[in-house]
Length: 299
Image (tube, rainbow, N blue to C red; front, side):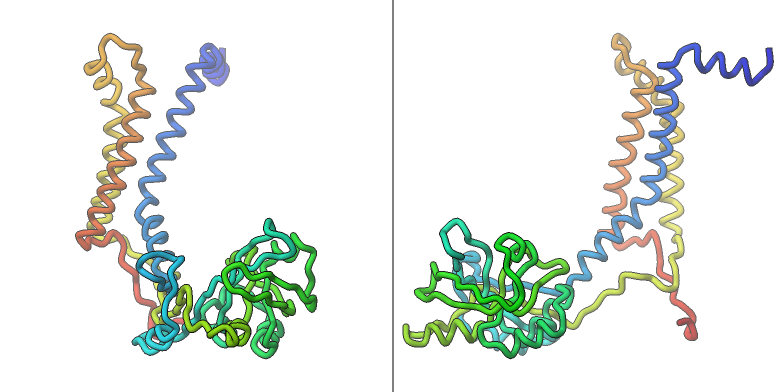
């Protein structure tokens, strides 16, 4: 009998054992890779959250309370602010009460500054700024009601005692809420003049000057703490592969604890422990990676 044939017959002699062994090896490899990539993944998530330079300001009692309109000018003059806009919930319904969707009065002049990632077409944005009753509508709402650009639609006021008719001048896409409708705040102010006016806003949005780079052009260099971190992680996993079955027999001698089960438990415990270790290192300011500065003449 040849050697390959002998190996094949032994592999197929206990299919369940072969399957469990294969799965345990695959799980161990996966956990090793997960532990090794964990620091860079957490750093990427943190950097992504930090790169959001849009901030919302609302009443301390909640979103349903109004802010004085003068606060918009106060926020606009804060250091580092490059754009300010505001939301005022109109609460209009289309045709019947069940057709209620988010519709807000905003300032058209700074929409492109505060929300540059909403993919508003330049011609639509220009018309939104110049047409007093112009409206930008989310794509889902356009499809739901069968609306099209250039159509006039009327929303019945529920919070404000006015009904407003809008001309749809474009759509809002990107990461924007696909169900909302934006219209010019001045159009609402004009409608409320005969009823005493309304110099308040629901929420203030501002965009800051701070920017965070999402790419490290010079690359990353593993630091001494990082080498120790990875060495400890790999060493712990390898140690667990050898001693986990013995620990299982000592701790639970009268149960059906298999070596595979103990190795899986050890690997999972190692994974979560090293998540905590990484967070502790971050809190203490210990760097696992260091960004390399690109040469002065690098593109």
